[in-house]
Length: 150
Ligand SMILES: [Zn+2]
Image 1: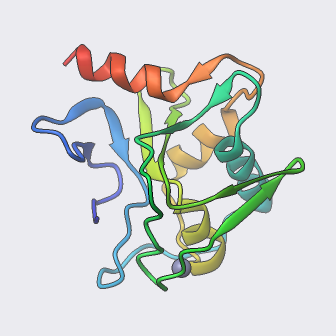
Image 2 (image 1 turned 90 degrees about the vertical axis):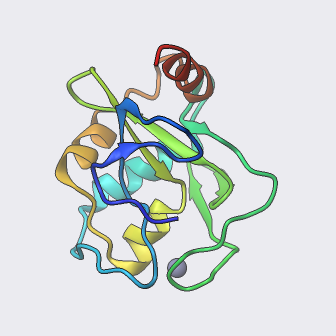
């Protein structure tokens, strides 16, 4: 599924959610911004995807695995703090730095960045770096509340 970076989120929906912007919905046939992301950002993104005790950024989980849209890899596993997670089974919802909205990405975005040199927009990088993993955060509940408030 392809969406332009920073477009309004409307995946599977009849009407977009104006508090959520798309990031990292790449497609093999389309151009995307390339560059090297700082390793501190990549490490933090892995931690955010894996989550913690009361922190879970994953939502819209699917039963199977959606393979990488660029190379077809379907066994992309990430590791952080002794935990591991298979990518391609969910989306992640990241609060923006301003505290007034969110970014939604396929969890495969980590693989796009680290393997395919996809360079995400700076506001997304800042948002990931600003995530407080010690905070209570359940993306599923937040997403449901945003849908209900439309
Ligand atoms: Zn790939």
